[in-house]
Image 1 (cartoon, one colour):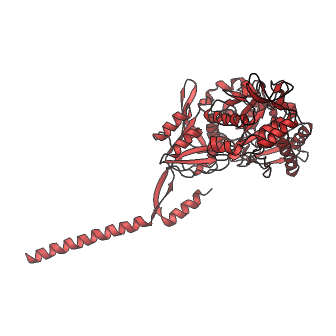
Image 2 (tube, one colour):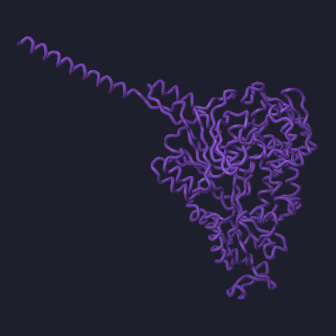
Image 3 (cartoon, one colour):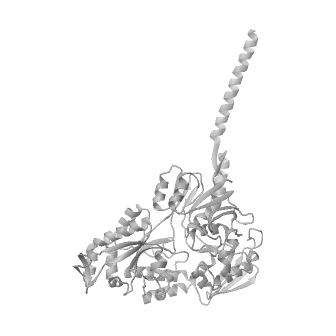
Length: 566
């Protein structure tokens, strides 16, 4: 019995030692393992908006639709972080010495998702739709291409003939192509009603496999990596885009875990998201600026705004830093020019003067204005020849811009300039385009080439986007020369003069550059806060994004990190 007990005891002891060794070995292994991003999984993104069509020719004025189109379709070129055109479906291009002939060579490996090669015929077919008078998409795109001749040289070469040199031309080659072999015979008038719009077939890195539609609006789109795309393969197995009617609904969806990421949140909801333990907020510089726009026309109802000293005094009365600090909690970069800092033409050393009420009053007095109590203001206001300085400031009907507008009005009242802040929907089409405004708070996108001709050339003051009506003969000549030369140094000098004259003439007051906020869950890895032109540019590095993780050894982790590096 004693021998048996000893044997049993020995077995128990050896067993305990074995278990201890296994546990110790396991702990050592665990200490050597590292969790790293792994391929596969589904990312569900929430977007504010409700696209009608996933069609590259119809999505340019609908940010929600542009999000899907940017993933599914490609153009000859695409915009870089700095807003410059770079090769996409075109592997290269040449420009004739006189700057009027562009010859593009398509990538021979480019394919539609059904495996059909992308050819010059697809370029010609898409351009014919854009050039059609019935084209329902961007009229700026239509007008630009209506005077350009396109010639198919061979299956992978297309040539464009311009009437004269046009420096921003490459911007107009970023539109996504349509498949001629699937849509042959389609007319521009049929574009908006195509079944293709909700069952697209693209040439990008992703393809649409499922679409939910409610009352003609897309509410959900499911995408998977395209097997025929020759570029980097996405790490994600699926990308689901869910569309929400407003920022509040999207925030709630993110808060409860219905979506992994949120695009298009208001600043108020971004701040709410920052308080969530599972949220990461990315602030991306974008090619947009907010400015105060004056109507310089003498028949605007406020004659004083046609005078440069009055506009300069109004600028000196503003504490723009305080506006950014109080309205945006410091979450924006102060603007000094009408070009964004993401552009190569931005004049970085130009600084607008700080607030100076004494100098502002001196300017008004020198211009012949004096303070008098007059009706209907019932307080002292600046006036000259019975024309008072007092006007209405139109602002977009959203909380942030209303807050900014009220701060501006408050600061101008300290200069004895009464201003009424009026929030309005559809500010641009209803008021700016019709020239029915005195002053307006405007957010402006300057996408791609920095050419400010459409916004500030005198020829565009009556029917174009020069809403202020600024018409400076020298500026007109500089802007015309800058778009007719391809020499970068010449254009830089011309745009330097433009920005300096803009600061002197004050047709508008640049306020700030707002960032674009993108909120993601902590489970989403690989997102980069790089400069963007459009919100859809957040997807530039989507092929690197992951939601899965795997336990690997330290050497394997190093190799994975190198593989996922941009």
